[in-house]
Length: 133
Length: 93
Image (tube, rainbow over all chains, first blue to last red; front, side, top):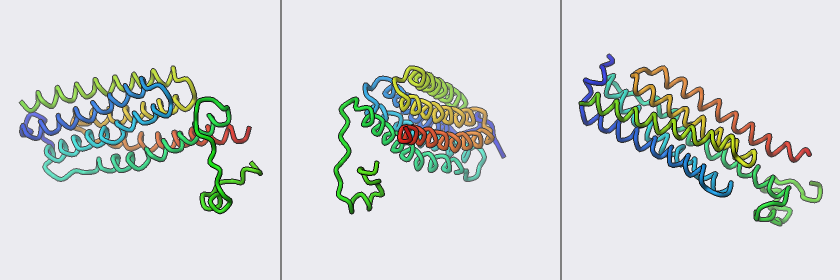
């Protein structure tokens, strides 16, 4: 049964507080870096601080809190952790490729040119033929 | 004793996450290009999800966890759709 937070042992409260503060502090640092870094390709790195250990710390705090307060093992928060850990690189790689494509199409910034690959390499990577666009 | 520790930690964490959301929305409104705005939206919803989980720790209810899970899934789909639009929209032009 659910106890109130006052009945929780002090070591559990300290562990929950520590992981909560680590997670939210990393999320805040990631947001500040996201605001302050100068270019887009540097900026895309900052929020991953919040999506790796920011999520991890807060999910650990939630797991410890509900496990101790309900007296049984609660670990369903790991679902969110795994899901965000898997999906964040996908979204950021898609966004970085879209941004690279836009910068190349407009010719601004100093982004690297499109690599000049051979036909077998293009077929292996699934890229389209540059002559056909 | 432990109630005081938990209350102060949860309050501080909520304050920091709210500040992170405010900063992300500043970048979302000010961002020089569309990709900055999309990453601002991504950071905003992830911080909102963390804020909901923190809220669940503060109140001791499990219902906030489910809201956070739904938010994470819908946010991922939205960000991927926006990134694909950014890529395809210019290819078609």
